[in-house]
Amino acid sequence: MDSSNASNKIRFHSVEEYIAAQPPLAQQRLQELSDAVAEAAPLAAPVISYNMPAYKYHGIVVYFAAHTRHIGFYPGANAVTQMFADELVGYETAKGTIRFPMDQPVPVDLVRQIVRFRVAENEARAEAKRKVRRQ
Image 1 (cartoon, rainbow, N blue to C red):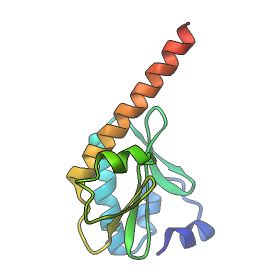
Image 2: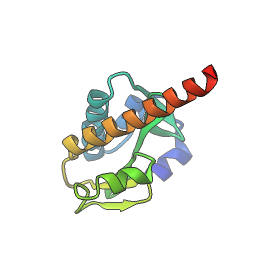
Image 3: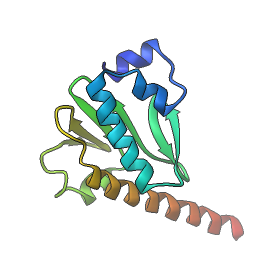
Image 4: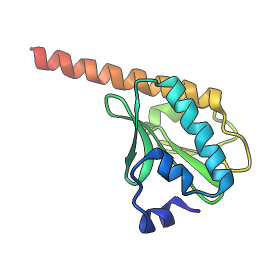
């Protein structure tokens, strides 16, 4: 199921509901991804945003979605694809987007590294906002 088709028909209310609505292989890949994100960012809350699963901690950490031939992983920052360029060789990338082929296991160690990087970015941004408010 392509996420764009699903979003036109169903409005999801939880990450679990989104995953359950996908075909079996996509469910497996999405669960691998979701588990890796939750492990790397235990304080992040699973949410649905733009009708896609996301994890939120001081803002969105990552989005992800099932597509016909891949799982889209959206860390949202071009800096991520630059920072992890060596590790991402072999995966399709675009600005703020990483595509994990559906027929391959999710690279959970890489996902955890990217999520930790994004959590640190969000924490730094939140701290900078707190400092500005104190002045």
